Structures are given as C-alpha cells and as structure tokens.
Amino acid sequence: SENENEIDEASREDISISKSKDSHGFLNKHSLSTSTYSKLLSFDFCWTIENFSQFCDDDIDGNPSMDSAIFSAPNKSAEFFMIFYPKGFSEEFRNAISLYLELVNSDKEEINAIFKFSLLDSQGITRHTRGYQRKFIRGQRGYGWHQYVTLNDVINSAYGLLQDDKLTIFCQV
Image 1 (tube, rainbow, N blue to C red):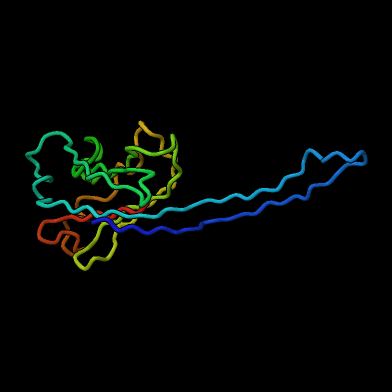
Image 2: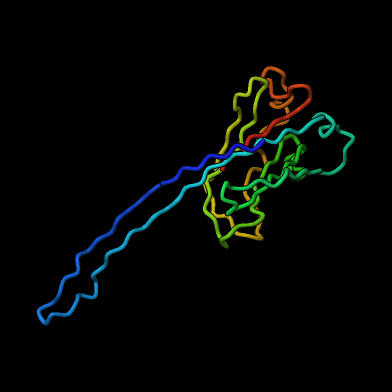
C-alpha cells in the first residue's frame, strides 16, 4: 500500500536588499527584493513479493528480475518503480539481492531525491536499511545496489524477513 506524507515547507528564505539610489538618483543595479521557496515531498511504497523461495531456486538460469508497480509523489510530480533481482544483477552478485529505484516520469527533466530501502521483518520493523541521495534524470538508469543484502540474510529465519515465504521491501523517497 502507498502511504503519502507531504511536508509543506522545507525551507523558506526571504531575500531583501533595499532599493538604494546612487548620487545621481539612479537605482543601484544590485537592488533586489524577492522570496524563494522550496517544497519537500515525502512518500513511501511497500512492495510484497510472494513465493520468494521460488526465485532463489538453483535451477533458475540467469538473473531474473521483477519490477514493482509504479508509485508516485502525492502531487504526481514524479513517478518511480523498483527493480528487484532476487539472484543478483549479474553472475558476480549471484549470492545477493540487487535492488534499484528508477524514475519513470516527472514534471522536470532532473529530480534530486533522497531515497532509502528497507526490508520489513515479520513484526513490521525495518531491517537492512540503506539510502542514497542522487539526481534522477528521466529516461536514464536509476540507482541502487548490486549487493543490497545477501540471500543468506534474507533466508535466515533468525532475521524473520520471510513471513509465509513473502519478502516485503519498503521504499521511502
């Protein structure tokens, strides 16, 4: 499910330089009076992958991947999806989960975003949290980790990450 939270005012800065005149009565060219405003949007997405163990079977050749549903900012200014490789992005990372975030669409060509991934345990507690701050550009590859977490850590029952053979990935942007 999607949980949306908007922080109305991340930063506000008022810039005011008084209009002054030089000795001839002309306004100085550096006179300025303006205000700047930045808005920070925060949102998250929870993705549950059922029958996780079937993706880890040694009989599966290659490096299968799955894409999450598309999720978006509350104001629909940006849309993302996650890419999940249960047996790693390539043969080199076969004993790890690879996980990435990709920008699908946005109202701007570039978006600066801070994002983090976590795995939720059977109690809903976040585990294995990792984050990035990156500039996303429409139409270009996203960001993430070739070795987000080892398969052993996910499968190990002591961590409680697989509840009824389901793995839940939590993404905050």
